[in-house]
Length: 268
Image 1 (cartoon, rainbow, N blue to C red):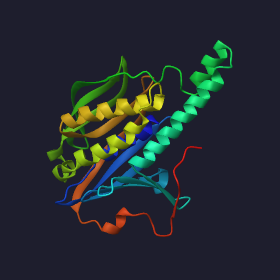
Image 2: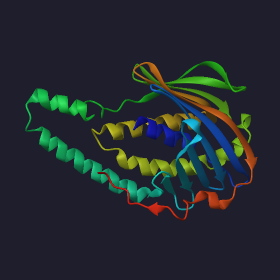
Image 3: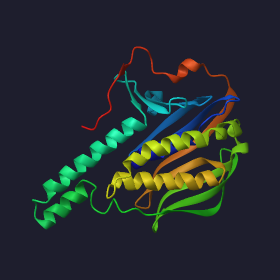
């Protein structure tokens, strides 16, 4: 879930303006197990598309954000299907998740205390829902693909969970244009994700943590050209900005293929 929310944060940082279309590329590397991938993005007006590629260049999935309707379209190219997420859908999913958690809590009450705690840990219900305020700590200067940037650690208590290298928007071609609608998309995503702020839920706690990290990043008025995620002190993944440029993007790019099937979004 942390990687999913982190990906949403990357999407928020790549929003466009009404003045120019922009295309961009981000290289991604998973370290354990090792794999590489790529995100190719397009922005037009208030719309954003991100295509995710696996090792070997295979198109794995796509995400489209529609600014006018404030909805997100998640596309599965293997199954030729897509789902549409909006504020109402996210609220319904959050309600379903809350009900499932309540049912699990009731079932766990019948177990002996030691088994109950063990099951909570296995299901991510033990202590994971305690919210910790993120701390963004400046650590020095860096450079990524020739772009100068300021380094920041994201701390969750004493644990470093992420590292950013942030550059001013003006350092990136199309950066000023991409910045202009960031607040609009951020507000829309905040409303969707806040549905998951369920007390005691590890999902809700993680969503709230990521929202506050993103709020701090917005105040820096810059874009992370490199993002490193950590797990238990070890590097887990690295996302590196490769390029961006102003261009013209066809409006048809911001809709799922006509032969793909829309599916309902529900927790199993």
